[in-house]
Amino acid sequence: METTREVVSSNCLLVSEYSESNPTQLSAMERGIQNFGCTHYRRRCKIRAPCCDEVFYCRHCHNEAKNSEEVDVVDRHDVPRHEIKKVICSLCDTDKQVQQYCINCGVCMGKYFCYICKFFDDDTSKNQHHCDECGICRTGGKGNFFHCKRCGCCYSKVMEKGHRCVEGAMHHNCLVCFEYLFDTVREISVLPCAHTIHLDCVKEMENGYRYSCPVCSKSICDMSSLWKKLDKVIALTPMPETFKNKMVWILCNDCGVKSHVQFHIVAHKCLSCNSYNTRQIQGASATTSSSRVTEMVI
Image (spheres, rainbow, N blue to C red):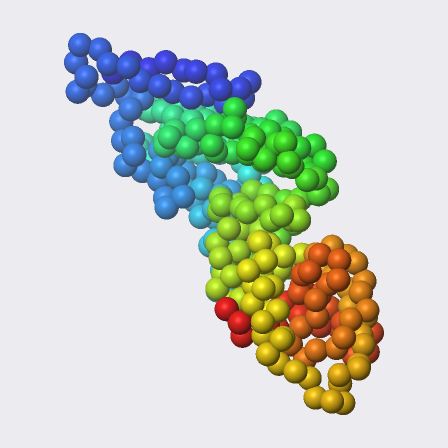
């Protein structure tokens, strides 16, 4: 086997192979490929963390170990990935400066290599690429994404035309699991309001009958079928004589319009967009209707 090196960007290299007359003979650069690594990445080296001088296969392994419940709160920390200076070859245990090839045995420690991120990966099916504006490597192929300068992150090109900007959209923790979103390896969902959250966290919210954004309380999906069910529930639930003429002011979480409506124990309907995702702003403590009634009618 022989290898060629493709320059993915000024600081990233991708090694590809092609067969010679004897395809079964592996060169030194392909030895041990896919046989080393962790649950996060397949690679033939480990990193020496500059923060604690300990050795791990990747930054995720380090962060999971150093932020576990067994570690004292004051000692918990993440590895500064861009400050990594040393790696250890998994085949010969040579400790060396960060580079793609082992200076001792010559093995390629990662078919994809980014010098800026100090990142190695033998699984190139992810189509890794480095985004200079994000400052980190991402997966999915560079041609499939665009970088929004106002949001400060990359999005799929499918969203480019209808994209709504939110400054620093992913530079915060997920409001369900509290993991930092910008460099997460889990899939992210962009809600209709343009706020971001992990996809599996959105599914967890839906399983708990929560259909509003944790940031702005706008509906996260088309709720029109639920609003029709609520129309029927309210029609079949007459209020006692004492409350028939009671009026309250509500604020719609979806369109932001205030309405003066008849009080009802189940929910209050926005007069502007017909949404029941509203909150009472005068007359009693503020509550959001949609979060209280969805489980009852679904």
